[in-house]
Picture (tube, rainbow, N blue to C red):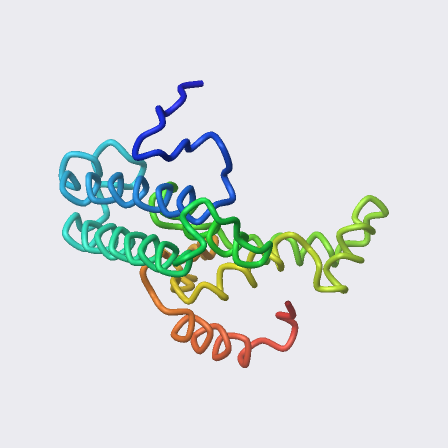
Length: 196
């Protein structure tokens, strides 16, 4: 494990739950996303299915995610204000900031695991009783993650079908939750058994 040296009086290994630590994680992810956007034509052919993706569109999505990550980092620093960059966030704010920082460092997306989790919770297996109870209580980890992601207001929910195959839904950093929520509500209206 490499350790980043302290700079500007900030030791990133001191506390990972500070405004500054999360802001820096967002910025590091933004740098990586910008690198991918700038080199889309070289990167895409090395990825599975990359030959079927429009490099310009892919680069625009990466830039939008990088922009959102940088703006979020700035908002974290502004929120820290007089408390200083080493101030710690409350648990809910930290969970939201972790989702943005994670997405920024994972190519600008986070997987929405609610579908598989719901199917597991609805199974008749005795081994899934704990999942069923958590799901029904609204406390399943995938439900908590969804709430944290949506609370940031930084993501668009994407559920798409490619070549007739329904893809695993995900959140794309750089969109608005309002759009995603409206889209998901319309999809839910078409399906009576899609509870979450």
